[in-house]
Length: 87
Image 1 (tube, rainbow, N blue to C red):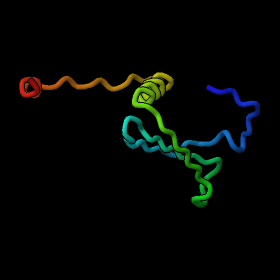
Image 2 (spheres, one colour):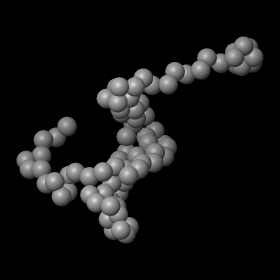
Image 3 (cartoon, rainbow, N blue to C red):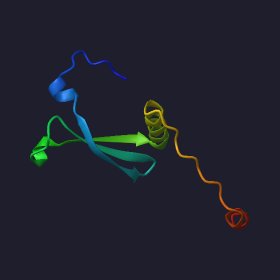
């Protein structure tokens, strides 16, 4: 991470309202929405867009599970029929 010389609470802090992730070729477009107060209009919602690699998306997801004290869901092992047909 890059150190910023000064933190501006009016600019740098808020409440996460929602997010959306969309495949974008080899990357993922992550859109995050936040606000500093109860939104009264669309102008109160800030939207940030990030291009992240698929590896970064996986790391971010696993990190969020870890800080939340949860474990990521396990992938279900394919059934016998799926394993036979995939050969």
